[in-house]
Image 1: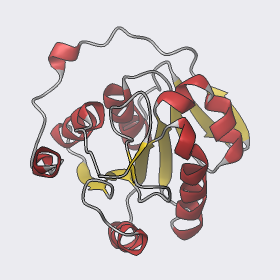
Image 2 (image 1 turned 135 degrees about the horizontal axis):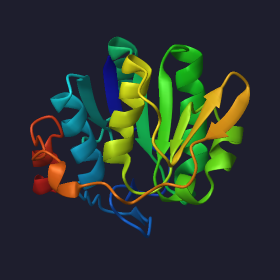
Image 3 (image 1 turned 30 degrees about the vertical axis):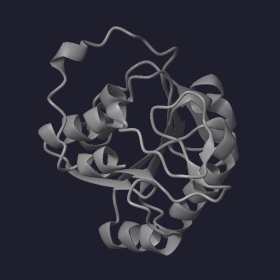
Length: 196
C-alpha cells in the first residue's frame, strides 16, 4: 500500500505557514517549520511496512504542475493532507480533484480546522476520512491498517460508508508517545526545513 503525506502548493499572498503553526499566516519570506506529527506518522507507517512518500510542496517550493505530476506518477492508495481554516477551501478543491483523477485513492484530511468541524469537510469535499484531535500519527496508521488489514477504526475518525457519513466517536488522548520511533529525517527531507 502506497501512502503519501502531502502539503500541496497553495495560492495566496506569500508563503503559507501551514505546518505546526496554530496561527496560520501568509509570509512574505518563506518560513518552514518542521511538521513533527506528520513526520512521526510517515515514519510509523514505514516501520509497519507501508510504502511512503513525503510531498511537502511548500518547503520544497514545488509548483502546482509538479505536485500533480508526482501524484499521478506514484498513484498513492492513501493521501493525507494537513489543513487550516484559511486554506481549507483550497484543500477541499484539491481533494475533489484528486478523487476525479485518481478515483481509487483515499483522501484523509487532518488538522485544527477539521478537528473543530469534521462534518463540514465530509460534506464539502470528497475526503474519505477526517481525523480529529492531534494524534494523526497513530490515526493514519490505524486507517492504513483498517484498509489493508481490516483493523477496527479508533475513536476520532469520520469516514464514509456507502453514501453515509459515519464516525467512531470523540478522539482519545491516551496514546503512548514513547512508543513512537525516531523520526526518519531522510524521508521527510528534514534538511529543507533546517536550511530555511
